[in-house]
Image (cartoon, rainbow, N blue to C red; front, top):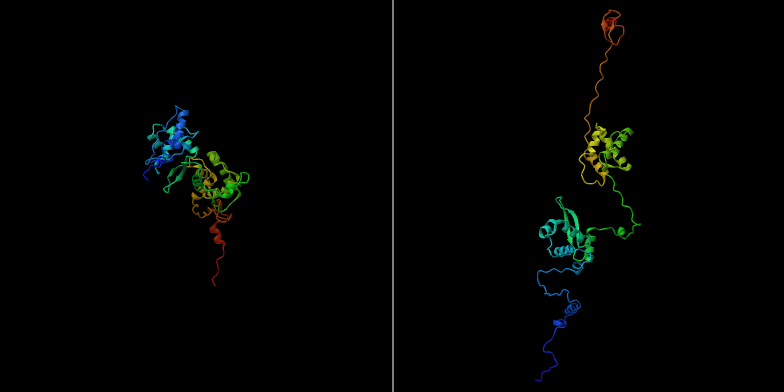
Length: 305
């Protein structure tokens, strides 16, 4: 009973502890194969650490600055500022190098930057850091941000239908339309591109907008005034739909109708100076031979009943 079993170990040994750990055996084998290579003296982290994939730290196409910047961004808490000015103030690299590194990370899927409009109307850049590009979660988030119709996503390039052109906004109509008025309106629209090349209109757009220009012309506006109202104070950015902008201006800035003017009475008729055949006096009247006084004397006096 008191005989000690010398073949049994004094205590249980962990299979992966000490010298039997496979990772350390691999390190020793690599150290023997490459005596001048790196040797890791690792200690397990319990606090303040970030898990970063080797697909980023050993990326074959990213620059060293982009890899380091990607690791730094993944270690930041949610909501931290990572704009170019903030990163340039944190690191010695300039804004140009940091901007180039951010573009590298965005190209390889480690960053997604989108421009959004806040409820106050301000446009901000929303940045999303992806610790594993191409993962199922990343693909799901991209699908939720930019949904696509299933039929168009599954269709090939030959089977895709052309996108329907959105209809232009309605424009005012003239009260009395005439071919001459519409022809003048069309000439005004065709000449807008001389004032601004961005206002190049198609024949269909000009046909849609011509009644609105005619409504302006019948309100006693000259073609020069209409042309100035349509081409002044245009936005500096490129115009995606110039016809829609012109339709909005024709409707929103339509001038009021001119006030009603009663027709003026015709000027009095001025008869030439004549001499009366009876009294030889000069007079002006409709009767070419007798003045008014002689004509009244010749009329018979009505007899009393």
